Length: 318
Image (cartoon, rainbow, N blue to C red; front, side, top):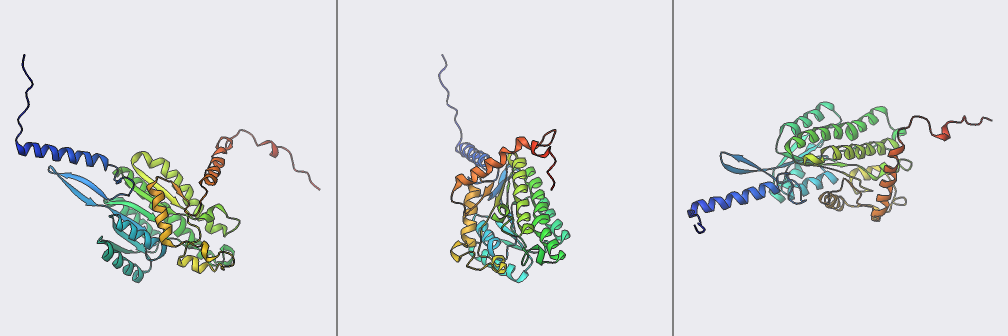
């Protein structure tokens, strides 16, 4: 009987074999682009038998101050190069310089007015065409001084353009591009005002409700392609927009206003946990689950061949 034969591999062959196994293991673990919940960092590309590593980029709108500035810094700390987008060139450049110095990441400044459709489309095309872009934060937003009834129609149109049209087009562009790449993440900054239109300006809160609907829909349509969508719903946050709102401390005490740092930190924890909707201010998670269950319980009644019984009888006239 022939005994076991152990192949004699040269030292170079054995080393090459081990390296190949290690590379295959890591590439399989990172094929979706996520490092165990910490966000998209690197993408591996094979060229002529060698594996190269390309740093991924994150696009952040409204990145000159507040929530957007914090997102830009924290994503750079996670290993992304950042494409920072905002209208104010001076503040954007200053923030980009600080982030680059503090993190060592590249920060590209894009000065753009997202109320202009041509500039939105240009940014959407950049997301589509640049294969290294793997993360998008739609943070840019406008509110109206005193509400829609105290504002001009041109101001309302600008708010709709920035709060609805821009994030919708950018989200759709990212959803398509990231799905083809098999990896990516999109964060849409909504607001808790979406749940309380009676308490706030209905036009503004309506734009934020739109982002919830958009996120829920695209999250379901892209999850199997390795793409993650999240809507973040801040409460009162210490930003310039909140400062301009003029809400007195007698209505919202200072203790109830969250810092952008805490807000973004919490939002990223929610993203890492796989949440589609993140409400950093809501401590009672069961109340949110009850809300969602009640909303979804209506699905079975949304289509019917005839009106509900309460609408089949003409209202009494006096």
